[in-house]
Figure 1 (tube, rainbow, N blue to C red):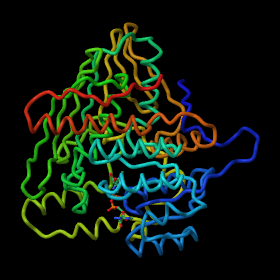
Figure 2: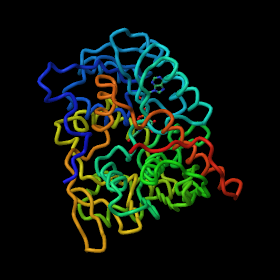
Figure 3: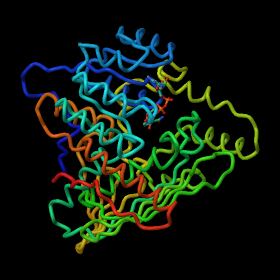
Length: 412
Ligand SMILES: NC(=O)c1ccc[n+]([C@@H]2O[C@H](COP(=O)([O-])OP(=O)(O)OC[C@H]3O[C@@H](n4cnc5c(N)ncnc54)[C@H](O)[C@@H]3O)[C@@H](O)[C@H]2O)c1
């Protein structure tokens, strides 16, 4: 059994009174609902404040938490009774929100992608470091207990050196109800920006972080969706280890089909209907579908709920199938942890802990603030992952391999 240091009930069990943190949320959208569900289950957090431009979200927030609300993030940043803020606004605002919060002494967890450009990422890192606050580039699949355990098998050396990493994911990203900001490449929307961080983060973590170069391309296969629904990348690490990343967001074949323990999502039929409508030019009310999933929307009470809802299957479709090959064997995720293939055969390695990257990011930030533990997914790590995503797009545009300059090593 691999015992994960994360997801095991941070803040519990040392006998001393629990130190609680006051949390603010910037952007009460569909993404925020997922982390709020985990926050409600975390015994060490109090949800106290939020900022959003939608009045209905703010009034729903006041009703549920009796919390303070603001119609802009700058005012939330000035709230003296907030310790840490989760930034879940549209991607184009991540930089300005993070800088404002850091300048007011708040610790920040920012959704993927951390920013739209490297210059923005640099400003965020600089603001966090100058103000002495923690910046966590959150919600990527690399936070999941299974992937962390995979990294620990690698660093243990039992299978020798990593020799290849392959990460392939087929999902229906393109046909979930989307707002324009989610699909506009100019403002950091669309599949490469939104899903790239999951896969590049995982692959970088397995390979040790230091990617030397990326060759890739992105492509669009459907006129009705004007941004790319497919990307592919070939990476080489500084030690020559090769890796491939594939993402198909058009939702015909789905990777979950090959993973017996993964749940199919209940929305799948709705997403097929949306694809068919778009293909045939039939009007489809995406805005209402999206609004239902946001905080204060009609699905809020279903989306939030008991702790069991936080516990997942341990398979993150946005990362997809991840197979790490080493000199003396292969590793993949399994229903209860990992399967390792070595010269003696096939071995199941159970992984203790909750399989949910949202709980892991709460734990990581809590332990950083209260115990001074390092944030692994910090601003420099997030910037290195963003650099890979941007390089894949640039490589496709320019039809050449891109050499990277902002990489940093993974932790042991
Ligand atoms: N939708 C998901 O399932 C999901 C999952 C994980 C991560 N995310 C991430 O969450 C972030 C938001 O995406 P989303 O899907 O929740 O979009 P969304 O449109 O549902 O949410 C954005 C929220 O921010 C608010 N907002 C917009 N401009 C604002 C501003 N200037 N100040 C304050 N609030 C503002 C909106 O009213 C909305 O409530 C993105 O970074 C995305 O990558 C989304």
